Image (cartoon, rainbow, N blue to C red; front, top):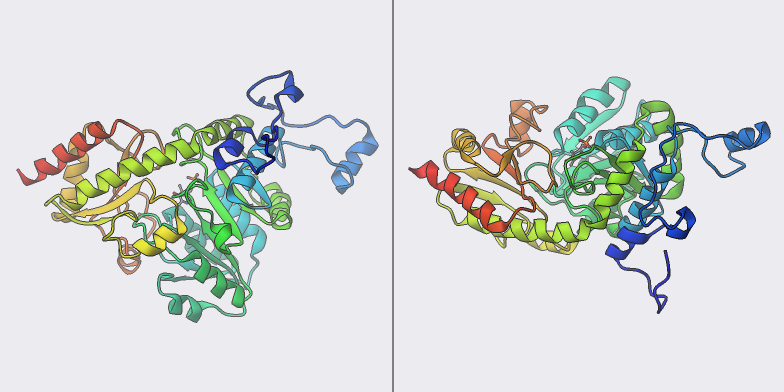
Length: 401
Ligand SMILES: *Cc1c(COP(=O)(O)O)cnc(C)c1O
């Protein structure tokens, strides 16, 4: 990337667009090429052996690394403020590659009790089959975290804001407790993207993302990322990705995520502005019982959210006076807002966590873990705000008729 004239560090959007790529190195092509190759030719037999011994820099095989993926990793590491990054095939691929690399039988993990349904299943139903103990706690209450930490705790894992109810966890406070116990603090920051929250700044050790969501941003791919210290990332690449999961990101998807990054900051501003307006609409509507949105002054952790996030995000969770039946009716009456799981797309999406993304939790677990059956989750997209307001208002009004 060309230096700017005053040699000042480049801003977020500039790095998201330019970092790590020089058009002159690729025939002047403005856009970085996609390296569609599964393997790489060695200059000589000796050179190949040196690459395998780690004595020579270069590419060996597409499961480990690819130049398109490497550019994405360099940009994400910079945007999150980390030393290095690893790009993988999905958010679950990122979480699984990380956990399987850093944990062994006999280790313990403490998790916040409200996390993405498949992450919850991977931890509580998957890892526990291999001799790893997993303790879900409410990390908004630090004393419950402290009580669960033992000398065997290797990792503390949480999301903030949490999927699906948007509880916000104090990253600095949790990281401090984890470190005091000799454990790593790992944050799934998918709901924010580095445009609005950078957990490493608050003391987290590793950040994971589902790049399927805001980073890709267009609902056309799956991808995942891990960001953290270079040594740990190298270990997750060589052990977790190469041997344990093989969850390699395709070069085309790496290219599409790079394209998404160019507009990330701009898109997040619009997602957040529209979500703030829709949260106000929901909060003032008589059919709505409760709204959870970090940008509302009524949000229980408003001050903490403001400290950790530069904008309140594009997701809203709410409950209707009529509970599950009203939620189902509302979803069916929407005409523009689309019934679908996932989030962070240009399209506004609505889903019912208890029967969809969080159906991996049992009914008791949902109740215990703060995922009420009436909760509806809205991912606010990039459509014209008036059209979203009109659609949501007509569906809400129809509930009272
Ligand atoms: C979607 C999601 C994941 C899983 O990511 P995939 O790309 O679907 O594998 C993990 N964490 C959170 C918070 C998510 O929203």
